[in-house]
Length: 165
Image (cartoon, rainbow, N blue to C red; front, top):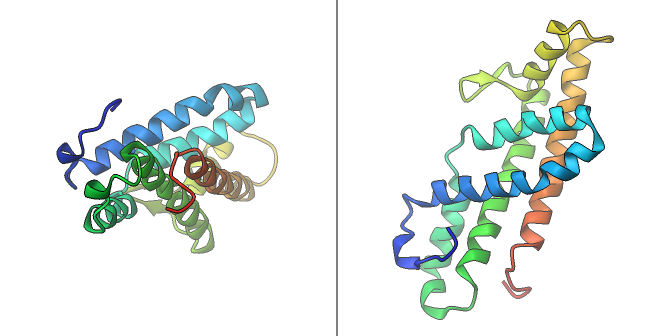
C-alpha cells in the first residue's frame, strides 16, 4: 500500500497489510544477508517462512485497534504508514519468542508444521552434515530467533513513528 486511506483499514485488512509489510522488510534484507553467505541465507529462509506462513497477527491487530480507539485517526498525530510499520514489527518479537519457546519445550510442531529447530534438524540429517543434527537445529534456530528480535527493533526504529508515540 503506497497511500493509505485510514477508513479502508478495518481490522479484517490489518493481517494482510502486516504480511505485506513483513514481506517487504524481509525482501529489503536479502542483499545484505546474501553477502554474508549461504549458511546465513539458509537460516534466514527458515525465519522468513516462519514469519510469513502463519499466525493470526493478533499483536498488530491490537496495536491498530488501540491506535484507532485512542483517537489516532482523528488526531493525525502519527502517520498511518508509521503506525502500521511499528505494529508489524511486533510479529518479529512474537517470532523470536515462539522459536525459542519451541526449543525450550522440545516442541515438534507449530501451526501444523515442523518447528524451526526440527526443520533445520531434518535438513541437517537428510544432507548427512557433520555433527549432531538436533544440536545444529537448535543452534540455528536460536540465532534465527535472535535475528527476529534484532529486526523487530530495526523495523520499529525505522518506522517513522515519533519519539513521543
